Image 1 (cartoon, rainbow, N blue to C red):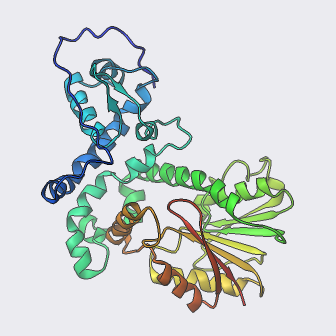
Image 2 (cartoon, one colour; image 1 turned 30 degrees about the vertical axis):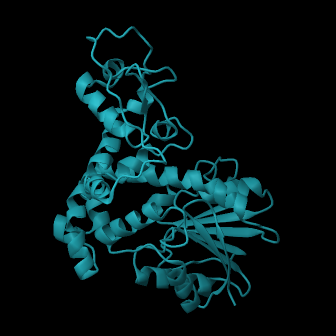
Image 3 (tube, rainbow, N blue to C red; image 1 turned 90 degrees about the vertical axis):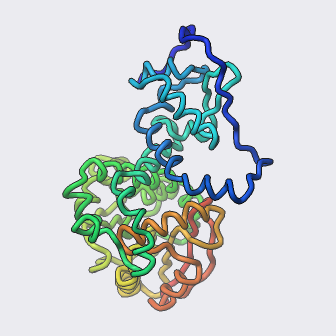
Length: 361
């Protein structure tokens, strides 16, 4: 997308809109805070609108007016200024005294070219179907199950791939973004001393596996996931890729079978859909592994984490769309122990992931 080149602002002179910036010292009274929270959908919608319009991509390093940005993103200046004013209240963009807008640390994360971009994560969390299921949260809490089939007439993934192709693409890009960004954190954390073979179970496109193999040139790897997923594996792992000679790509379903033995099994963010899937996956790992093999399980937690607002929100969305749940430390340890794993140390990977070290007896 074209970035704004600063030009003289020819819009009629009006008093600048002074956008209040939220600071650590501000502490609105409970009555106002509750009003703000009740309007939380407006904030989510504003983030989504900015991402879809490409406002962050349009804004360069120089301050730009709403009129200048509007020309680039094909919007009306006055409504765009209102959108930016709302986002500034949350620290997403900042308005200068002359009424022009500049980037903040958060607004840069909405740029597509930012190495830590959250653009597609923001779009995924605000996809059209989310606005249809959130109002039924009370029904999900009463029943303890997904409201998705009752709302759309079919299951979540069936709907996503049959009726919401654009949303499915956003989902794939969001999951890829998240995996790429956390892969190096995982590779930096894990000690592979004494490990000659590692498998990423349900590992998606294999970004974690690729990061580990790049860091440890003597280690061989296996990627297991559904056929349609591994067909899009990281280019480094596919035929002709620089890691291909040390990789096996195995199409399959970890809930059905894990047909290989390795020194280290990694299971990341796949034990949150439902208890039966979790039970079967862990049972298959234990059945496949030799005694003494390591199993590292990496998940978001809804306790003991600095990202509680994020993880508890995702936990509720999982309830709505698939009837799943994020784990507490206790619930995840319980499921590992039930599967026969011996649980050892638990390490934070980053602000929103924890790694559980286990051994097969």
